[in-house]
Image (tube, rainbow, N blue to C red):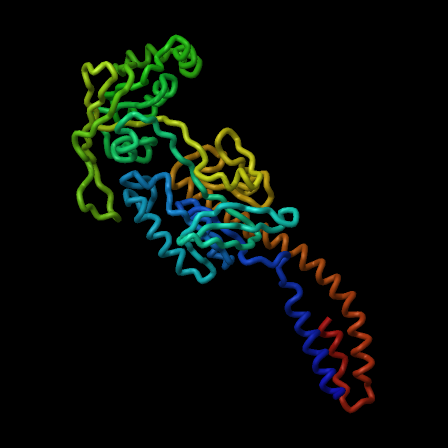
Length: 400
């Protein structure tokens, strides 16, 4: 019986010595939950998976760049469709054993115990409500473009009407181009596309007013002379519709390969029903808003319409433990390479921060364990007398 008690104490002490220093600061279902499965969310998940973090990605299946034909300027994947890019990324990320990728919509993020962990509520397909706990939350929730009601803009968004010349301009180089924007924004956009297109018309939709001309002059002194020099025309009539006459897409194209060039053709109609104008493609400057309210509802501040993120702190928001990456955050960069970078950046910072928190808890636990060991030492010495046949030596000191 004495030997059995001694063995029990030995096992208890050995177990404490092995496990206590490696216990996490907080026990949760996941180290991190990533909200959003676009390029930023996938990059964050990949970075966390590479260091074997237990991470859950919840993906609503709604993406800002889904309407566009191709994702460009992504080295190694230049010109693939957005769906193919996500597919390839998921395939690679899924090979890591600590990652779970699920379809669902996060509905609420609840900070717990002074932001030491979070409760995340979500809806899975089939009206299934679920909730999980997590040490950290990564918001990769993206933005939503607010498109005007003009017939033809929403229908052709990403398919001849674009937001970014870097993303889609090369496919329409040397073609007749239109810019859809307010006067002040349209004028400054000209400088971004001159290496691609020189036949340019600014469709400013009634915003060429004296007040807006003053605003434009403040942004771009001498802009009128500049447009005259380049033979850029301003069309101020109210838009009625933009009608597609030719589709520049390649039917049944391989989604893993780019198409170049793309020859779309549109006819711009005006409210006066006079003199329509033909254009091959358009770049636009429309407002946008947060795709999801879960960050804001959890207490994350907005800088303008973007989630406040600290670039020096791994893109952490004003809510400790919640990070914002990709289009949604306030660093004001919007493209796929940036989304990848921001996701990876946060993954590294988040991983290190968790281990810093763990180290503080583990050091504190060692001190607490030493206090507890004093009682165990007394028991050990009473049961393990040197003259007894069951004397096991001074092993307690080795276990401490």
